Image (cartoon, rainbow, N blue to C red; front, side, top):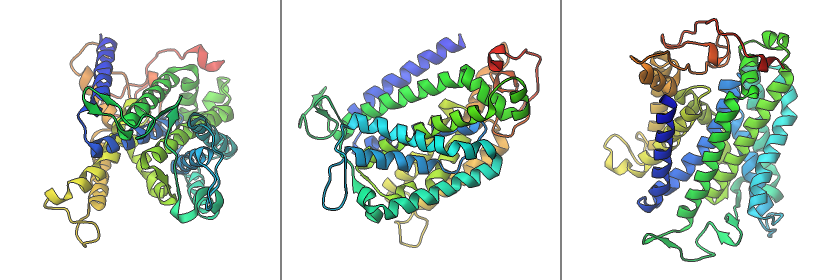
Length: 391
C-alpha cells in the first residue's frame, strides 16, 4: 500500500510540474530551471557519497567540464572563441561522456584514497579545472566566459525562435517555458535511473564497499572496479547538470563553478539525506531557490539590505540559513529530510521503517539491513545477505 501511495504521489507531483509553466512568471521559471539542473547534480553526488561512500569536494569541476564541453561543441567559431558547431543533442551527450571520461581517469586515485584524503584530492580538481578555464581562452573565453547556443531538436528550438510564436492554453510558450519541459524530462529520467541503480546489484555492491571494503572483497566484489564505476556515474550526472546550467544561464563563466558550488552540492545531499534520491531533489530545491527568492524579494524583507550596501545581503542570509539547517539536521534529523519523512510515514503503522542510507563511514551493514528508526543509530538484523552481491 505504501508503494502504491508513493506512486500516486509521484504522479501528482509530475502533473503539477507539467502544469506550472502555465501559471509561473519568468522569475519562477528561471528558478525552476536552476533547481532541476542542480537536482541532477545532487542526485549524482548522493550516489557517490551516500551510496558508494566516497567523499567528493570536486563535483563542481565535473559540472564545469560538462558546461564548457556543451558550449564548445554546439558553438560556432568566432573571432574570440572556437566551436565545433555540432547538434545540441550530440553536445549534451558529449558533456556527460567527457565528464564521465575525466571521472574514469581520476578513478585510480579514488580507488587508492578514502575519507578526507579523497575529499582533498577531489578538491584539487576544482582548482585545476578553474585554471584551465581561465587560460584556455580559445575554447573557454577566459575570465569572461562564452555564450551558449540554445537547444534545438528536429528543427524545434527551445528558445524564442523556430517557431518564433507558440501558445498553449492561451499562454505564450517562450524559451523558458520550452526549456522547462526539456529539463523536467531530463530530471525525471535521471532520478528514475538513479533510483533503479541504487537498488540494483551494482548499487548493493557500492553499499557493501562503503560499509567495509575488506568484507566486500571477501565476498568477491571488485572494490576498485565498484569505486571507479561510482565515480564515473557521478561524473556523468555532474556533466549533464553542468550542460543544463549552461543552457539555463545562456552563458558560462568560471565563477559559476567555484568551490562554493561544490559545497552547495554537499549541502543539498546532507540536508536531503545521504543516499536518498528524493532527498537530493528536495535539498537542491532548498539550496538553489533560497538565495534567488531572497534576492528577488529583498526589498520587501526588512532584515535584508541590497547587495553592496553593507547590511545583510540575500547571499549572506542564505548561507546563514544553510548553516543553521545543517546543524539542525545533524543534531535532530540523523537521516536528513528523507529519513525524517520515512520515520513519520511509518510511525504507528505495522512493520518497520525502510531505513535511510547511512553516510560514508557509518557502521553496520548495507542499507537494507539497517534499522534507523531509533534516531539514526543502526542496529544489525539477521536478514541473510543476497548472493547477488557476491558474484
